[in-house]
Image (cartoon, rainbow, N blue to C red; front, side):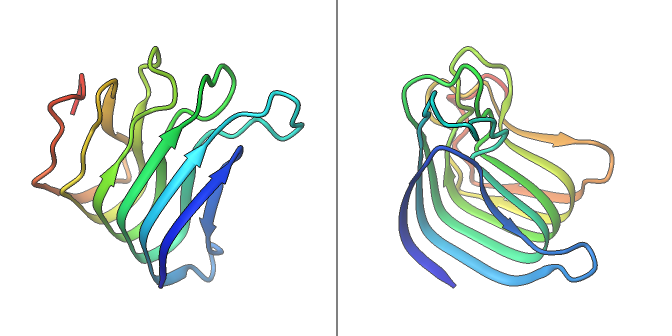
Length: 151
C-alpha cells in the first residue's frame, strides 16, 4: 500500500511488473501527481502521466493528476492501464492539453475493471477510451462526467 503522496515530475510515472511475473495486489491511495514540463530536459518525451502495466488487482483510489502550464510535446493522458483486475476509484483528471482530443484515461488490454466515483474536470475532451479489442468486463458506477465532451 502506498498512501498520501504528493509528487511533482516532468516524465511518466510507471508502475510496472514483468509479463511473466506481473505486479499483484497493490493499492495506491491519495496520490496527487503534478506534471510539469522542462523544455531543457533531454527526457521530455513522456506519453502518459501515469502508466500501469503487467499488473493484477491494482487499486487506485483518490488519485488526482494536475497539469502544469503548456505541453506542446509531452504527455497527453492522465492514465494508461494494461492488465487484469483494476479498481479506479475517485480519480480526477483530464488530458494534458486543452486543445487535444485525447482521452484522460486509456485502457489497453484491461480484463476486469471498476471505474467508480471519478470526475472529469472542465476541459476534458474524452474521459475514458478503450483502446484495442482486448478490453472486457469494464464497469462504471457513479462517475461525474458531465464536463467531458465525450464521457
